[in-house]
Image 1 (cartoon, rainbow, N blue to C red):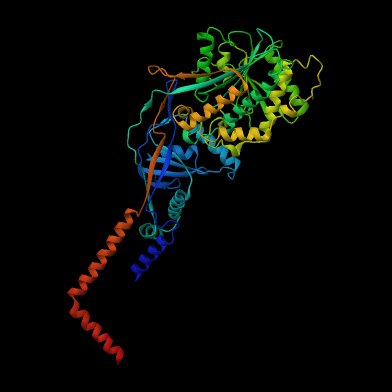
Image 2: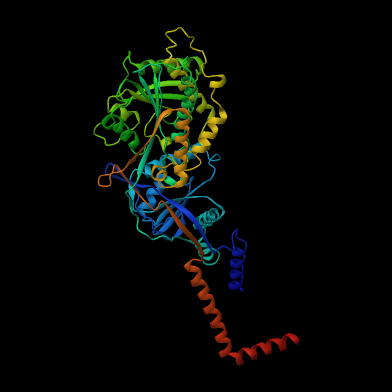
Length: 546
């Protein structure tokens, strides 16, 4: 009777589960970044996975695939999985992060950045959450929770009601280096009203960065910088279109690739203009370079410089105009100057302006981020839900107003500080800012994808099309890697087909085998002692009737 009840409970448990009919489920998982930059290896070198899924709460993770949600993932748990020689880590990424607490998002971003600092042999995958995967997650969490119960309950549940999940990466091809990667940079210019006019360069890198390239959309970093640059190009094109409002400055715009990898696109673009081109605006009178980076949040604007600007320099004058616009129209915003020397010993740079500073071009980066190593500059959770459009528009206005006041020399002409130049037809439109940000975050903009996938190339082509609408002398530079001595080496197999099987644990097979053996033993005993059992049964029935 006891065995029958146990079996009935097990069958009832299986039939009452959320997904009783699904024995296998196929989905696509996205592998953690793998690249080599400045002789340093980053990311995971492994891809093959055949292991049973386990919760991160389990005490033993050896040769298991550890399943974590964003709320579970931490540097400590990641390194614990490595220490125990886990087969892999699979992170479930929510499709909408707006409901996740800010502290949880920040904690995940920090752990994400620390995870990418070193390489690992352990495969690490990220997959968007869905019903099947969430069911699997809850099942293995319940299994882990029963470890606090008595030993009898744990064994019984494991044998009868528990369901195990086997995770299998079906592609077993070896990982290969990508030797034909390239970086694309766009440039365009608005020519000033006089010959030999000084040039102001406005630049932003357009690519994104995160644990998994296929899930990195880079809304704040650096979709915000691209959005502001494109709005500046659109509005200043209207001022430059009329001889009466055309300033005595050339305004040069540049969208660079490879920004998340030592600003390689910027480096190659500067070399192309200064070392190889016969004539270039960078050769001549450059007033300063303004780099836009991560500007969709915060009530602080940091001006990052490699050397403090001299009081008589154009860069110093622009920063003064920036401070005047902020103090007169947005007093709640704080402007801070951060001076960080370039460490020539290091093989990588922290900000885009450092690429120009190395060539002795006055430059600075404007950002709401104070620390160049901030987790906000590269995360899969940097999505549209993390963008504050009110602050993004405010920063658009600050940069545009300060730039116009500087180019038209309005302070020396006695123009009031609170005067508003960009209004009416020159106003920033919420719909344009929102639609541009939506477009930029519609596909992942990781560097290793932009020159390989047709959908990703469409994004670059669209930005080039807008450049041609607003600017003159638009050029598209495609910088290909030197196969013998590449600046950066990416690796393939970033997205993998995965199969999840629902299976009963080995203990269930032993339990079922034991039940069958017990049943056969009882049948054998009954056959061998049929006469004796029949006599006893007949006597029992006779005594009941008497």
